[in-house]
Length: 74
Image (tube, rainbow, N blue to C red; front, top):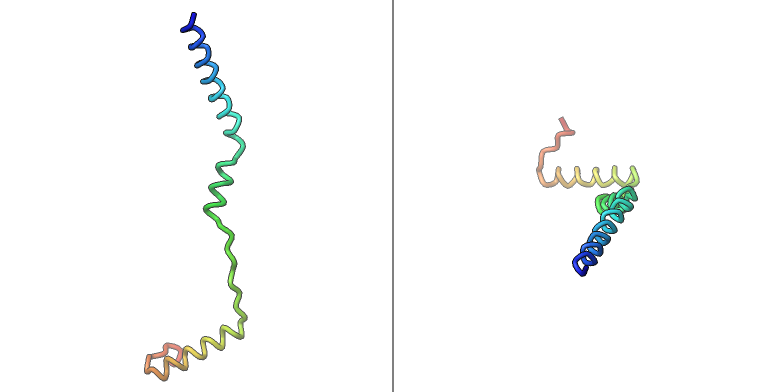
């Protein structure tokens, strides 16, 4: 009798665990967690075109002063 109760209890626990895993399999929670880890919020640095142009001109000037060949002077 005691072994029957233990068997029934273990079967009930097994079935509960089995069906509870099925209930959450389609919830997509794991997918949402993985996507959140894979694609963190990133801020995109925006640079003004004129500011970028001035930086490039400055770099080209520094390269000429250092004697480094500039391919745009061909």
